[in-house]
Image 1 (tube, rainbow, N blue to C red):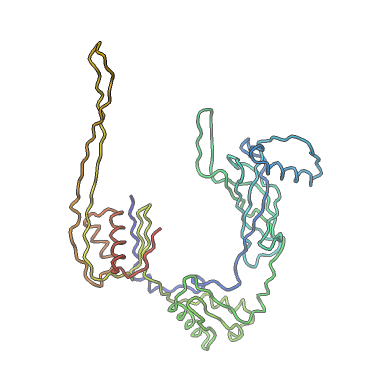
Image 2: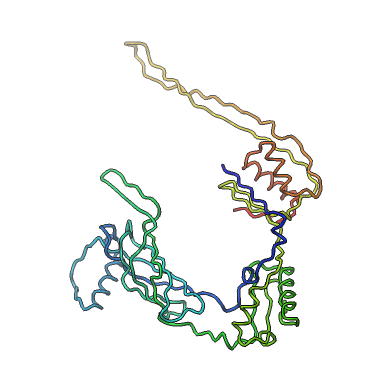
Length: 361
């Protein structure tokens, strides 16, 4: 197991971060789009139409829209696949612009490699069509198979089309008429919000921003005396502030990763850790009767059990105010395994001595 310990340096907390990297501007966001389409031109890796009847249905609809009447015909091609097409319409996207799309198979197709997405309308949550996607799919993997086996690398049933959708409809948003703008902090914190308010007001020399709560700072666009809201926000987003973050420890038990900040502190506590290993080995013994004797072969079970107890690190006292980085350094010097280190941290948190948010993934 790999134990990766990332300690934020002392200068990290004192660094100045731009406001644009700390907040989201209210109303300036993307919109999710989704569509249902067909990928053609596959090399025999498409849907089995017997198992995916919806593929045949959409293929029939497309051909009929193109003037091809196939009513009553039996089609069993293996070079088509039904897919979901997803994309995000960025803010201020204009008609004629392009966006990337993601293609995902929904039938039993084994690969989308080399396929071409047929023109697919993309709808937003309101049911309106905002973009149309079409193009060659770049699959994210490769698959090969023979008579007795197969091998798959990556995910060949999913792919992307860079700039594969063209924007057909714009989202109505009169940004130039705004008189107030709310800045939403990505990580709500009263101290950080207060510093953002102070930094904006100091930049303009008058009260322009007002902290509403831990996650919101309101900006009076009119008091900035800028010619438009866009000019005002272009200046505000480049103002630098020093954010304040919570003390946090993040643990990933699957990989043995531990990530922590320098503000984490531990109260006075005693720690003792030891390991117990139980080994059970089965060595069955086969007993056979003598030659020409009236008997049968019998398997006699033989079990060996062994218990090993690791003396561990003993009982160690951690003084009050010790940083978590110092505790981890000491445990590393004692050769504590990554999983044992995670268990120790959880026990210290349960004892109320770890003063930080403890996140386990």
